[in-house]
Image: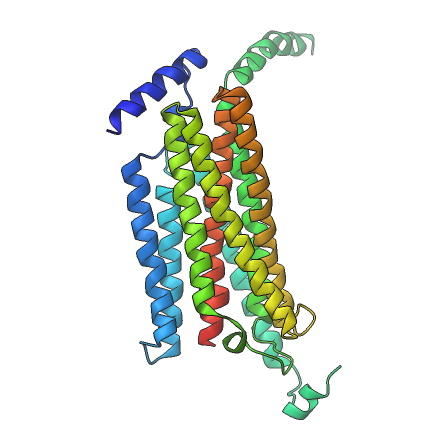
Length: 135
Length: 207
């Protein structure tokens, strides 16, 4: 079913663009890839919500790690199945931009948390009373 | 010196010809780089929330405030809108104009219900006295989630614009290019929402 629409779209794009179609470079998904991505996303969303709402895991730390881990996996699933990321699109430049952004995001997140944690540790200790009377 | 300018003069036309040949590809790459810069905005807001997210100023904490079933429904709305946009793209590939418009409309409806639920949540928080001015946690929460909501709002404006454009001009190459950019934008917003519901709501409620 999915092969026919593809060939139709390519023919049409070929006519419109003097044979230089945008179809094979940007990479569309098929119905199958969208459904796989959707099914994976539903599972990867349902598990963390169920874990937190039922309190199935005793340890808070373990729950947090599972939630963040599944979130990271779901982001990768979206990138592959919905945003059609791969190493070939735009001659690898989208992948390069993504990797660069991820490095900057990592530095911004980890750096902020690290620096501010040390700042908090080195602040003058505050009692609960002082906290409540703060403006 | 003279030979250098001569060489430049002979090479220049070739350069422009080369540049003229790839307008489609460069639009997609440029839009991708815009999305990456948007990603940095959200990264900064996430970092702010990571730093300030526990500063309740003796006010309510996420466990007191957040209604997880509502957040789950909200997440489902955005996920459904992602898959329906995927259907719109598949119909666009089939050259089916009316079906493309139909699925764009479905996407806009899911997007609007997401926005409606989010505004309902914000309204209730402010009613309970947990507005953005209550604590550093709530300031950073409203900024992060509000910025995402603003992106969704403009995404819906763009979807409606594209529905009108496709209806008036059909699935011409220009509209296909715009629909593909919008597709990246819309799926990108869903990716950001994964971070929001994991990091802000679920981790927040765990405490």
